[in-house]
Image (cartoon, rainbow, N blue to C red; front, side, top):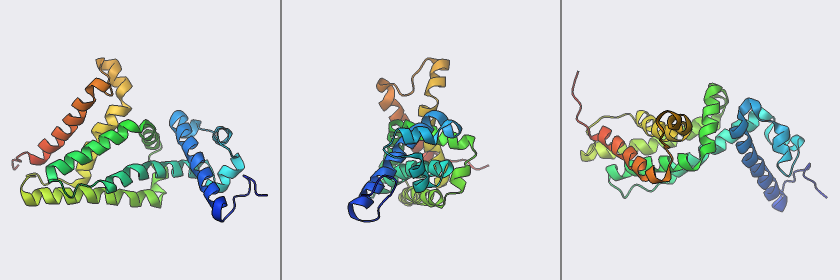
Length: 221
């Protein structure tokens, strides 16, 4: 009889292996987000799953590879949502607003993603730089923005010649700051950026800022 120490290769065993791998990633995501890369312990992750430290190494190769896999899955969620976003039937202004709202909603709903990105920045993106999967994930997201921007310029709705990567940074920075800095911002200004009664205000404000930037008249010089 196969055990958790013997991942099988066919039928139900394959499904069991995939389920075990996803369970490890779920727990690892929580542990890395809570304790950081340096503070997280593979022993603790194993203790919280139905497997062992040996099996975690079997699936992922080690702590570094496990953290990279956690990052890959975290980024794939938002990138897939961006690619699945149906904006072709919308005018460019509505489409760009919808994309901004998607980022806003995702970042609010996934605080662990915000923590993981902050942790990886502390490590100067060394795990991301080594991941071919993460490099490939960025292009489709920017392609969506490029298509919307091009449509907006063709229609005359967008007067600014804006780079898609710059616009992505603009949208992400607001959404990221709101979640990542809520505690320090609250301590300084006595305002909770994620308070329920202010949510729609900030969500609308993000869209308004982006649209104002894309439709503003530019002066030469």
